[in-house]
Image (cartoon, rainbow, N blue to C red; front, side, top):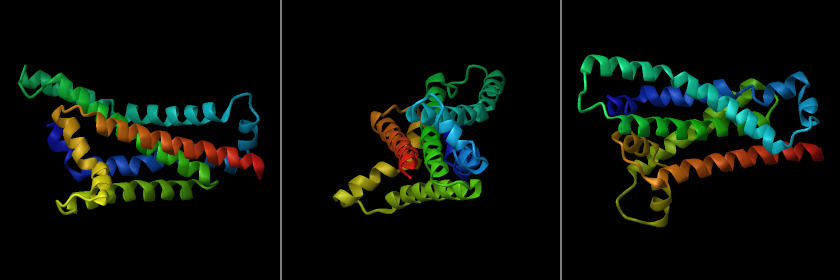
Length: 199
């Protein structure tokens, strides 16, 4: 059931469209309403501010996926102890959802820090998410000949990563990939906030 659901376009539509809606107000609303200067003069460092905003968005994202646990309990109740209901597979599926959410929420934080308009922040996040998703499609269409370009693009196959997670395959490479990109976008967000001090 999990593998079928996460191969449909509905999961990816939910993910790509949710990130802009959740993150568009993180920094853009603060700048628009004039409370950004107050926030930046509070006795917290920029790193703590970025991590607090990111964790708030990620917590909301994870709460949105919480009802999926109810569906799993309903399936388990009516299917009994079916061999397809493996808790390790469900755990790796949720790990994949968490890692994808971390990346998309970090991209949303970065986009929201760039602008003071929520709509522009949402559009930038949508552009980043769709671009990353299209790169993963491009990576699947590449020829089998191994060059450095195909080797780099093969790491961006989000569909294959999620397919592995839904099968219960725990590979360290996608985990490192998602955590590294998340840290990179959070670092970009931090640099954008720090650059405003010099303006």
